[in-house]
Length: 493
Image (cartoon, one colour):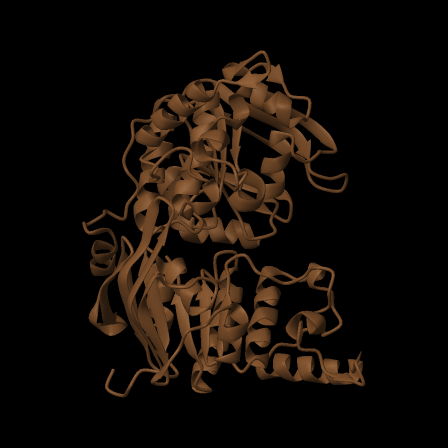
């Protein structure tokens, strides 16, 4: 970068109780640049960005914007300076309209009364600037994730953002929605807006980034032009060692049918679904977003009701409740770990023991020593990175949070484990560890139902692949016949 940077962060330190999150981290951003921030979960990326966005204050270090010292005390200060952050968990207010979300807190008014016409005009103009035809009167609760992201970007434009931070923006998007988002980002770059883009998806990084800064253990490792590096070099820089980006081999020994689904209907109008997963088998479930994969998983686990059909674990027929599914030996790693999988303010130990409290309670009181001992055993076995098992789960990285949920079901001793998007938002090192763990569980005879939007992940891990389309099971193919072309052809019909 030859011209002076738009943004400079130098020597940034930040510590939390029991952990040092940043160690002299540094970053420089040019005007109109798409700059990728890369690193394992827990490397310090989000903490550094939250400092930039005014959510945290650094313990040490300096920041400058256009050569002027920058010391935000709050996100409002950051907005006033032209810095906005779009979090992975979008912050739109569901009961409000698109226009109300975009101008929230800065509504145009006359004589103390909101000027609805001006409100609509401003929101519509911001959306049109993004090439987006959303109705400003539509409720946020009716929008898709991709549409909500457009609302967040429009909000940033309203605050005249010069720096836009995007944290895993494509985690829940389809390929078409991702392409559309990239077009919007390129349009922002053409207008001089700088984008700090956090992602674990290597193809995206090379498609959209100009430079990449790699972080590891709270420190900045390197900043290089995208054109001068490779996937292998970036991964080695992230983890401090080389990691094979492949699915580990395993010994496949299939037993009897562990999970049997017969004529299951997700709704009165849906087609019946039938399949079986054998002990030791990894059964992949592919399909486009909205195809019914998660709805099927929730129905199997008893979290949602089904209108007809039968689900059996071995010879035991399930009656459609979560309690019964767990008691029969089924576990479920949900796709939304923060909202549905974890009690974030509770400790890792409490989250791991959640499904086996009956085993560690004495006269209705939890045996805390037994709970801690069990949690420590799973921490060591799954290589969960945390200083103590009493650490609040909220403070853990995405990959370590996912391992805590998997540890819960290992503690149950489940015979059938449903994994819904198990590596979403997880870095390459944690992803490899989860792949190894899934293989080990299958070798021990656990039947795995693996749902993933990552087609190479499905094709690499699964012994058979079922493809969902429009709420029905479009077909099942063996691993030897499951090519990307065939699976996608079945997914789109």
